Length: 360
Image (cartoon, rainbow, N blue to C red; front, top):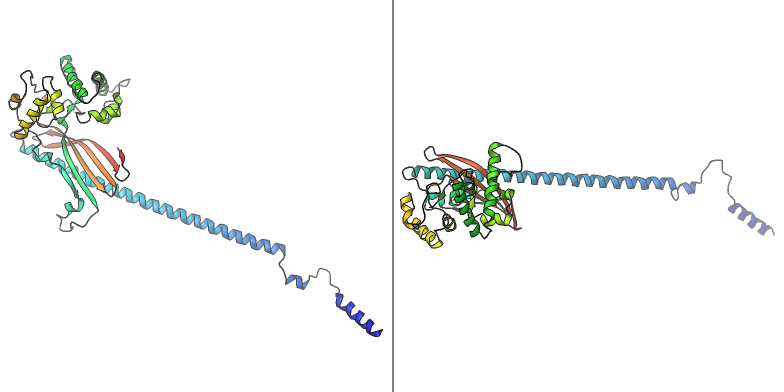
């Protein structure tokens, strides 16, 4: 009996707890699992740190992109400036050649395809031009290639000739334009429309008045202003030109299609015979060309000539997959003063790899 009482008392003591003071906490609970507020604070801190990392990464990426973009823009601007200087040098080269040609032709004025200006500049690496300098070698410099050519603008028919105050001359020029339109595979009825619209445009430009008259075109692409389509302009491009004033057709440089359009009595065989004759000996005066023209053709000094005042100068720069072309219209004002004036410039940029058309 006494043994049972002792066991019962020991069990009661082991199962009982000492009394706690009010507000006291369980020590085992404080050192065991964390409470809910502490775990929430640590989760918020981790989320804040992740947001800061994401924000810093985003800002760093944006700064790197802007820096790379700035480098690309700066490189493009530098390349554009360098290309402009190179093409300007090609234009200066052409002006020098045309000046020398003027000096050579002072005694016997005649511009033909056997002169130096008519020889195109074949594509060559830009460093080959710099190798003449002792500070450069042929392997130095950028990987760029330059080419160019000079073209007689008066080898084609000038559409400004259609604008005449004399009805007889206007009718004669209209017949020439109609034959050129027919050669280009176009409706000859377009010629009177072009003459009318050009006359209106030139009159409006001269009087500086506004109205329904179209703007006066200065390039062939601007013939759209007077109603021609892009396809029609491309057909006319090898045959016609737009110059600031009426000009003569240079018989030393004109193609056979332009020569045959000058008069209905001139056929292709006559034009071929004339071209063979000028290749052997360029024409210098009216008497030189008369034996190769039909008797029915009455040559006029106002319609044809043997010298040129307007030239197209084209410089072409190729770098990597880009091709930049600058086409300039140059006026040789006087053979005696040797003055050359740039009247118009046109930039054409192309992507050789993509095969896209040029951007003007």
